[in-house]
Length: 159
Image 1 (cartoon, rainbow, N blue to C red):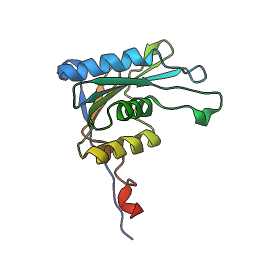
Image 2: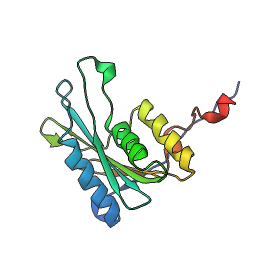
Image 3: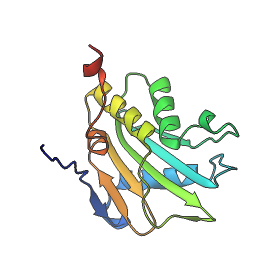
Image 4: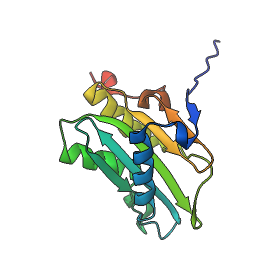
C-alpha cells in the first residue's frame, strides 16, 4: 500500500495587500451577495469575475424551494460570462458571503460542483483562474482552479 497526500496551496492576504483590480472584484462580489435570492438558507453568496477583455461579470446564488434547482453564485457568474463573452478567458474570480446581517469573517471556498465548472473553464481557455475568497478578517487567494480540485475529472477521461 502507498499513501499520498493532496494539498491545496493558498496565500492569505489583508485587503490592503491586494491589487486594485482584486479589491474592486471583492467590492463587486459583496455588492452582488446582498442581492442574492436565498430565502431558505439566508446564506447569500456573491461572485465577481474579471475577464481578459477587462469586463467584470457578477453573479449570486439563486435558491429554489426544490433545492437542487438552485444555482451557486460562482456558476451563475461563470455561465453568464461564458454565454455573453464565449471566447474571452476568465482571469480572476472573487467571492464573498453575507449571512445573518453581516459578511463572514472567514473566506468560504466553492462547492464541488463550482470547482468542477471553474476547472472546466480554466482548461477551456488554457489560462489559470486566480480565485479570491474574501472574508472580513482575511482573504485567501488560490492561484488556479486546478489547485482547488487536484484529483479532478476532465475531458482526458472521455477519449
